[in-house]
Length: 151
Image 1 (spheres, one colour):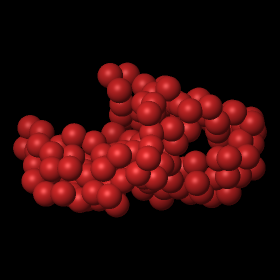
Image 2 (cartoon, helix red, strand yellow):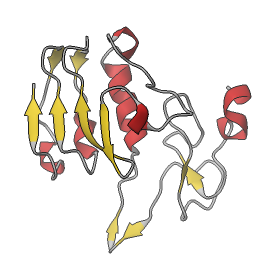
Image 3 (tube, helix red, strand yellow):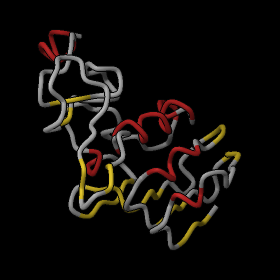
């Protein structure tokens, strides 16, 4: 919606990127010094010799919301609001603007929990107890900071 998102609804400006190359309800254009062109879909910034993850925390969480019936959750305050940080979304814990925890105990989640959640680089904990979900541990090896899960 151009009225709400401005020109970013067409294409992300140079110096920014989003998974679809434009801002959507679930993914905003994020800063990236290596995104030289309009509509960039990846950010290839290097950090101490390692290429950073090109999937944003927002994008991963938006996928979780959509895959698990987010609009029907008991609490979903802030979710997918392009004007708010994911750290303001109900059930999301952060440190330095990076997702460290997802606490959605008994919140009406349903369906298959997306394996991409393990791509959240600072994820330390998951509390998904008392929800009607299927859970696969595929990709858990990528969650190198994960300390606890309550399923």
